[in-house]
Structures are given as C-alpha cells and as structure tokens.
Length: 218
Image 1: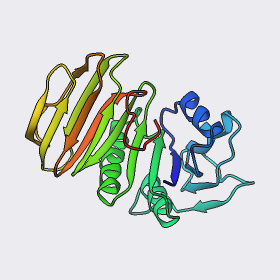
Image 2: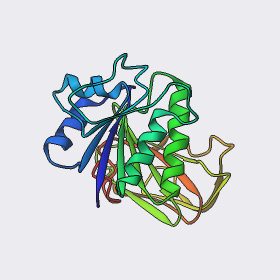
Image 3: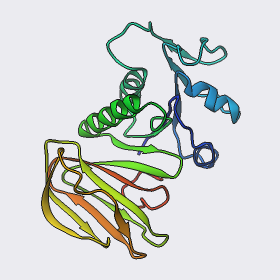
C-alpha cells in the first residue's frame, strides 16, 4: 500500500507525524498551504507544497510547488487529495485538517468521505484522536486496552448493516442516518472492538492509537 501524508494548516500533531515519518511510513508528503510552516518547525521538507498560500503568506522556495489563485472552485485540501490520487497513492493520512475553524473541519470531513468512496483508504489525525472513514462493505478493528470514547456517524444519507462489537453499547446490523446523534460517545471497555458497515459511509472517531487493523498504520 502506497501511503501519502497530507499536512494542512490546522492543528498539527507533530509528534505523531514525526514518529511515522522517521519510521518510513510515508511514501510522499504534501504540504497543503500553511501546513508547510508546520513541517518547517520540525525540519521536514515536503515532496510537494501545494495551495494558494494565503494562509502561509508566501510561496515556498527550495521545494516543488503547485501554486493556485485564491479565487478557485476547490479548496487547497481538495486539490491536494486530487494530486495524491493522480500520483497513484492508495492511502492518505491527513494532518492539520481538524480543529480551529469549524467550517474548514466540516468541509474536510466531507472531502475525506468522498475520497474514501472513490476507493482511497482515508484517515485524519488530530491531537488525541483520529477519524477513520469506512465505506461498505468494510470494517475496522480497535484495540480497546486503554479505553476511550468512540463515536460513529453516517456520512451517507443511510448506512446499512452497521455493527459495533466489543464496545459498551453494541449494535447488530442496524441502519444509521446522517440526521441523528445516535452513535455519539460509545466507550471502549478494555477488550478488542470492531466497527463494520455493509453499505454507506461511516466516520469513526476513536482514540489515536486504537485503530489497528485496516491498514491505516495509525
């Protein structure tokens, strides 16, 4: 599996990124506008810097650049995802996509779901949690040893055959919709857990180190 890291301008989990970068987990790194500054602080030169660079305030030098005008129909993150797909990646781990502006976070969640529906293995890394996107039929195993909160939401109008095993409250092949809070704040109980969906798209919010078995390498 070819894995690209995309680093946006929002909250950056530098420790998580750096551990995986130094360990060779990423085949390429794309700085998305202000994400270039986040990488610069830890001494990482991306393979590509992309965006309109309104957040960064300057066009980077000494690195390959794809610059776009601010007046465009796609966000910098969408353009970066398209570029990653064009370069042939099969998985993306996205940093700096969650937090700060709520509208940007919502836009990024919708974007990441749409690319997951196109066959990309997609995860977004925050400060203490991650979001893994499941497109049915698919499943995710969770290491529940350390406990923590797990929330599962449908990003499709309907997601069918949703199963949650090994959590405090279990579900057995139910239908979830995108217009309910059902799925909020379930709990890991110290044992292995499993989230599955037969059709539709789920966003699984879970503790950062708990996602262990779908190839994200979290």
